[in-house]
Length: 522
Image (cartoon, rainbow, N blue to C red; front, side, top):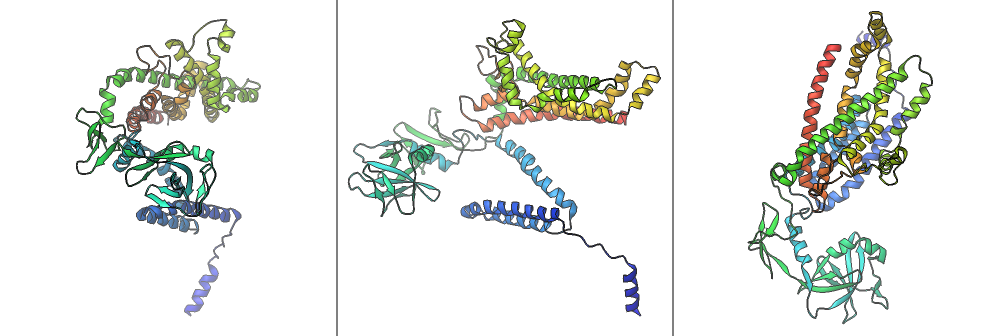
């Protein structure tokens, strides 16, 4: 009886449709598995070589989770959320966290590695050829990925292998008549152009010996010398003929009693020193307010000006009596379709005082980029020309979404075209486009290319070659952090945090007002 009931229920229950395995299903799974396998093949060997077992375990677990997720038909929402979350972390969260953490360090030229690397660089960089020391004929080679020296002893003519661990005999090497090693078992001899491309690595390699180290002298010779500066672990200092330099963990330098430090240092955490430097250093803070004021003007005029121009053109082409709108729209988006960096360079030449097209058309002799007022006007005009086609496109789309019945009703009520635009069309446009205006402001606030490729931040006053009349905070930061003093990544990151805070504050206030506006016109 129970069996008959189950068979009756099964007969009445509609059969679940069988899912078909489509080509898109197979291709997507293959693509996911291929990408996952490629990442594992690329990342696993270095992690194994360095003994990073925790990172290796996390990577393998993530790979297994991704493979399991996309090989099953279940968890459909996760298939879309996981890639987005991964990209969000990789391209948004991680750069922000890394920038903030870097701002609290002295990371930059002279502070790129740890203390051990700094000591090695100091000792090897101070090597001087000892009197009477031999000079070796040197050939550069590779042992796998490791750079090595093949050294021919001038006295015995024997070939020895020089590595960072020391010297060792090398049998079976073939030496040419010039003393250059032509072949060596298990090694890849580099040709002159290949060795020249590795010049920095060759200069950095030091082969330790009993009395000193062997360093390259060019690409074909090596000499044995002694380090003028030697690290003493007992006092945690560097000793040499010039005195003693003790380790200062706060600065990441070896410092002597006079406060002078060696050129090579190491990376340490400096707390809020970079932020304090921005506010207290007169060279920086003295011009910060002025640059910030011009930066706000540039961003606001660019965002509002491109919106006004784009909206005006969109309204003109949106009129029902307008003819040839397709042709006009194609012509108007050409500035947006062209590569912006190329257009900026073209505009820079057009503003040239001697042979620029603008002066030739006007019959004038204006030094556009040589005076602060004209230079600022010039970069704003260029930015408006490049930016208004985008606003024209988005405004056109927003206008088409506004029902014509609303403006017709306003006209029936006796409203003039201007009052209908101000009371109906513009508020509805602002509700839709205010987020884009905020993003345009944020983009132009950090529009490095618009300044660097046209005015280069100039003109520069004679008393302040570090800050120009058209400098934005981003270009000013770049010049301070990566100018003649070398790269200062920690300091640049600190100023980037300030810029982020300013833009975030302004954007937050603008979005709050946008929400109130949406509530009014909802």
